[in-house]
Length: 177
View 1 (cartoon, rainbow, N blue to C red):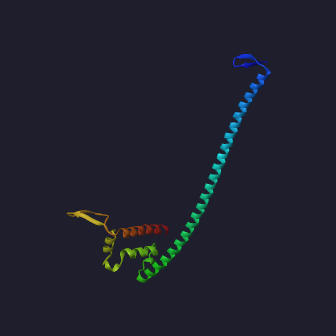
View 2: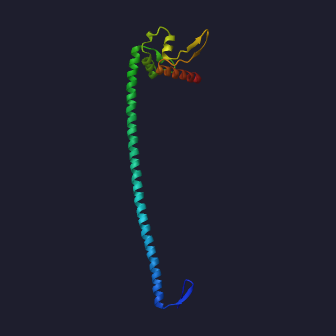
């Protein structure tokens, strides 16, 4: 029997053919077995990775659920606290007998903030002094009969912010009506 080896033919016996075929089959089988083992280990590794990812995602979902529950409890608690403080503020504002809440755009919190920042209104003899205290009165800079008014950078900044927000609210209320 002749077998082609690279570029030439060689006469070999039947036993040699069987041995060569066996070696080739054994080599191919060994390679296939190695590939199967590698693929098996890869699949096992992927399975472990999938289980770990699944467990991690389940953990994150549980943590997220607990965070939502705790946030809801905190919101309920804070709403109760806000209602309590609003009742207390209402009593204090009523004791002082200011009629600030009758003005459109002024609610309980704004009225109490105004009272807290201004203090006793009787300390100011006129509205100009209160405006100057709040920092909303224009300041005149001039010399020799010439001058300009500028925005004041002095005064109570918190009170200035309150008056600014009230002015914005009044503009919005005027647009609606």
